[in-house]
Length: 135
Image 1 (cartoon, rainbow, N blue to C red):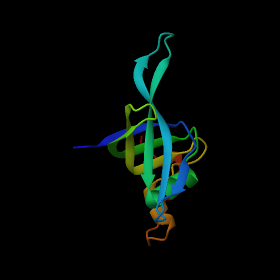
Image 2: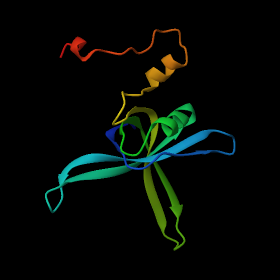
Image 3: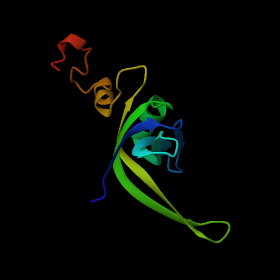
Image 4: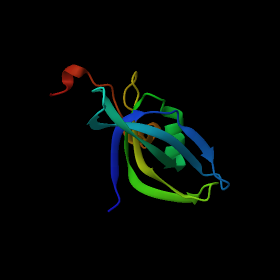
């Protein structure tokens, strides 16, 4: 099974482009705490390239900003090529199937909320009084 879940911080601004067939594709890097300490005792992070396609790519490009928290679900994908020096190179990317974005200054923006905003007929998200939360 090829499945990955990452929770971290957007380390770059999303970069959206369109393929020749008009499909949106967005790339960004996510920083995830590794659980290791560096030589100076500080926390270390791992960085991953995330690739998002279609409507979700447009949503990520519009809503995610560098420094925002993100919850990414997807699969790992390896790509290889031959460099200018003739050596074979590899990169592993995360192809996202879901990205939940949590701005540092706003309420969470999720795919579920976007469906409600598009008029799915459901009442959609509502403002919640913190006193109503049972925990």
